[in-house]
Length: 200
Image (cartoon, rainbow, N blue to C red; front, top):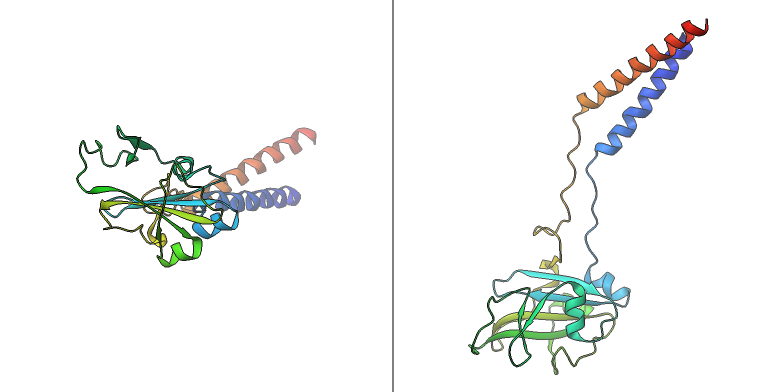
């Protein structure tokens, strides 16, 4: 009988430990950041809308600035002349006539981008070849009136606006876990005792 109790107690303890582990808040790693992207030879793309909100992500071996933009997950809209007039449907619709606002296109090394130092691209995104480890920056505003947001404030693309990754799971209360462990322990004792009586 003592062996039955020890077996049941041990089983309950293991179950309780597993239950605690399964109910603990999940840890969600943030999507790849600028420095990690650079270290892997990728090209980070940061897009800042006129309201100051910014998103970013990493592209692998993009053929052009436009390719990097799309490979990261951004969508583009072109006007009749073929220019990119909207990114992720902003603005919507694209201006029918030029009003001084447009998508500015910048480039920088990873270190410069983190420090907020950008260089205006000397060619359109269709004609550039992004350097591995560099950052492509976009912002929407009037002539020479914007710069990409600070990298530290960019929300990784396709994640909640808090930038903290998916919401963690809610842990179960300790009393519920204890109740589960006790219930299973009792069930094991009953089963083992019943088998012993049948075999005896």
